[in-house]
Length: 285
Ligand code: CO
Image 1 (spheres, rainbow, N blue to C red):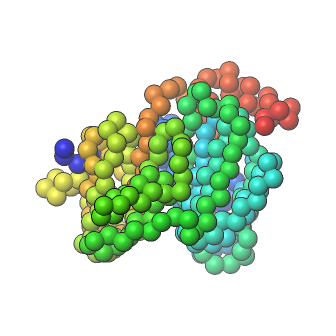
Image 2 (tube, rainbow, N blue to C red):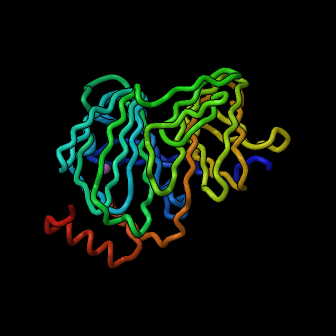
Image 3 (cartoon, rainbow, N blue to C red):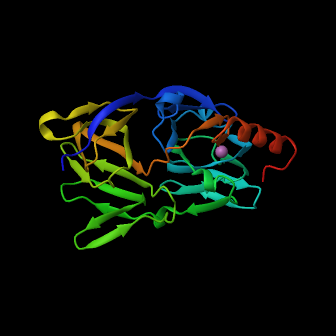
């Protein structure tokens, strides 16, 4: 089967969220820039504390999952369930908002680099009102696999074949069966990986640019851009030019209507009104 082709490029745009955190949003920058079941991908990356120090004070979510993956820096997650999670370089947190969670994510540093990603993955209608849950993933719980031609892959969700063995990421049991990998390639390095038939897939280049697809008709994906992949085969990616780093994400689409308002993602307008009302009346969770 021929590999997936780069179908659409969504350049990240500068925006601000939380109490004034400057970040770059690719997926989710507009309603048409989603990829079912992925709703949004933000990259935060700065050496300037003014860009991140305000953090994300207490706020709610309902109806989807948020995944935070840190490359540099230190943040503290706290939520209404009593969870306290230290987000350290190379670590992640997988939070299922379900019917409701109220949490904060605050920087635990006043200088230095803060860098990472927040991804929003939709929940199917049948799970939007399930109880919230939270999973703190330490850096050493994320397996790192060396690639034969140089470079490495960190497996946050999904699995990769290593010889006769399979190495699986720490996140399991999610209905949309997400694949979440962080890949580092040397100059001229390449990576290919199978993606389940029918699953959506995209790549986010965060250092260096990539060539995606078969050698003969590969298309270039510049840094700080999400590349939506078309077709149904595996992915084939090369570092185009210098070394490169990127995220590979794939999951089973839900094919359900989306009603999105701020921190709530439901199926209908009425469910959004219910969420807003529940939050106002202290009944979200
Ligand atoms: Co949040």
